[in-house]
Structure formats: C-alpha cells, structure tokens
Amino acid sequence: MPHRLPRPPAIAIGALDAAGGDRWAGLIRHGFGLGEGRVAHLRAGLGDREIRVARRGGALVGTAALMPMAQWFGGRPLPAAGIAAVTVDAAERGRGIAAALLRALLEEARERGLAFAVLHAATLPLYRRLGFARAGVCVDYQLSVGRTLAPLADPKRREPLRLRPYLERDPAPLAALRARQGRFCNGLIERPPLLWANLLSPADDDPPELLLIDGDDGPEGYIAFHPPLGDRLHIDDLCLLSGAAARQALSFLAGYGGRAETVLWPGGPDDPLIHLAPEVEVDIDDWDLWLGRVLDVPAALAARGYAAGCPARLDLEVEDTVLAANHRRWRLEVNGDGLATVEPAGATSGAVPALRLPVTALAPLLTAHLGAASLGAMGLIEGEAAALALAGRLFAGPAPWLADRF
Image (cartoon, rainbow, N blue to C red):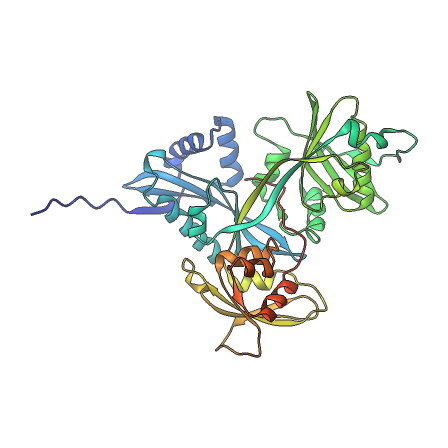
C-alpha cells in the first residue's frame, strides 16, 4: 500500500491576541527590518483590533492589517481599506498563507462597508491573483534650491511670507486642509491614526517642523519639513490649496539657498511646485506605483464622483473570481449633478452601451490611472467604440497619486 503523506494543517485566520504579541513582533521585525521601538509604534498605531494573523497547526505564521480610511476620487471620498504590514514567516512561504490571509481580509473589509482596497506591494503576482492592479503613483520630486529657485531669493522679487508655526500635534486642522485638496486630486487619502502618528509623533521622536500658510480667509496649506541635513532639505508632507500658497512655499524654500542645494518632497503629476517653479530643473527622485482593488462594485461606483452636466448610463459586466458578489453585470447611471446609482443589470440591451472587464481592469478605470481607450487598446476591457468613449468621459480626471507609503 503506498505511503500517504500527512495532510498539512489548515490555515486559520483570526485576530491578534495578547498571547501572540511577541510572535507578531518577531514577524514584523524580520519581515520589515524594524527595531523594537518602531514595531511598538506600528502596533499602537494600527490597534490590535485591526491586526489579523494566520496560524498553521496553532503556530502564528503570518500577519496583515486593515486601516479603514477614505480615498478621494472624482471629488468625493470613497470608503476604503488600506492594507498594511503583510508578511509571512520565511520558513512558511509558498504554502498559500499570504493568499488565505489577504482573501479573508478583503472579505472582511467588504462586509464592513469598505468599497475599495489600496496597498503598496513588493511583488505583483500574488496581489494580481487576488484582483489588485496598478492604480496610481507615488512620486518624490527634487529641485535645485540654488538654481531653480534663485530668482525667488531676490528680496526685491519676494512677496512677504505669510507662514506661521503650527506647534500642536493635533492632526484635525491639517486633515481638514487635506480633505479640501482631495476634492480636486484623485487618490489622496484621509489618513488613519497610524499615518498621522507617523508624521506628527514618529517612532524615532524626530517630528518635522510644521508651518501653516495663511491666506485672506484662513489657512491655504501647510508644509511639514526637516531642516537641511547636509545639502538636502526634506519636506515630509505638503498641502497647497492655491497658487498663492504654492508661491509662498517656493519663496520660503528659496530662503534656504545658502544652506541646501536640493529640496525633496512627495507630490503628484499636477504638483503646483513643479508648474509654478521659475526654472525647469525639477527631477524625479523616486517613483513607484500603488495597487488598488474594487471590493464592492456598486458601492465603489456609486461613491465616486463624476463630471456634472453629463448624465449617462453604462453597463459594466465585471468578472471577479475572488469576491463572487461582484461577478455580474451592473448598470451605472450618472445624473446631471455627477452623482451615480448602480443596480444589477438585466439581459443585454443594445440601448445601453456596455463594457466587459475583469476586476483587475476596473480599479485603474475607477481611479483614472488608465483611460478606457488605453485599457481597450491593451485588450484589458472589451466593448463597442461608443461604450469605450462613454467610459472615457465618465471616468476622466486628474491622474491619481498618493503622498503616503504604508
């Protein structure tokens, strides 16, 4: 009789408890190369109730965390799940643990009313199998203080600065400014507690200096930065809501011309510091892509904003092999105010333009990372020319970007 190998223990997904704390910390230290202080900071910021762990044969072998947040698309906040701290014991990789853990987390997030998921990943194949796709960018820019901003250093050309220190560690006023920014920038998130703590109360106890930029009717932005280290001035966070605020920021940075050669900051494709800089020497210091995944098709499409004055109907036949409730034909109806309703669609009707697409193509379409014409040209969505053109108009918008990496 042939020898039968024992069946491997099942993978169980559950919450982190006190007994698993030390083992969880060990996984995080080895998975991300963090010291004890930063591990403790991460756990406190996430909160144990949002940390999930995978156990195999009773042993804690993997972890991931959920950060409920909102992410702005089309001028409206969409309920989203930030996925963070995903790691598996090196000795247990290749056993399907990460896939099981993430699938459970996505199902939970959907049940909790979160319509979209966003994460940063070191590898794509695992996440693509789970329905994720590239959906936006993270960009760090660099410019020369001495050359690019030299014209602004002339006292005769500099307007009086209207910046004042913000000495509090309360994120609420800063979050209110960022929410205003989200109305015209796709992809920005309303930061959960961990990400505000990373900025205002970091684990290394070296918070940035914060300056509010005043306008005629109150603050129009802020700058969070560290004074020059060597020849670089690093902006940790930046929010600019007007051209006047951007010019104030540029004039302020020009004042460091004798102390720093370059300034670095996180921004987007339509970054105002680039377009209002007096010279052209702006470089990209770092560039990467974040991944998105639609968790609840009707909720995500209905929460997103659309251009006003363009009422339309479009059918979307979505293929989703992971979250079965998404796998059907949906009818998107947008009214003249740019608000949408989404209902299951009946049989194919030639009266309503229709597209067929996998859920991996829906994410970049929804975020405006890729237009319908580009997705169609790549063979990622199918439909008649009229349907592609209509989808192109409906989902058009600013290129999506994130200032946060998590």
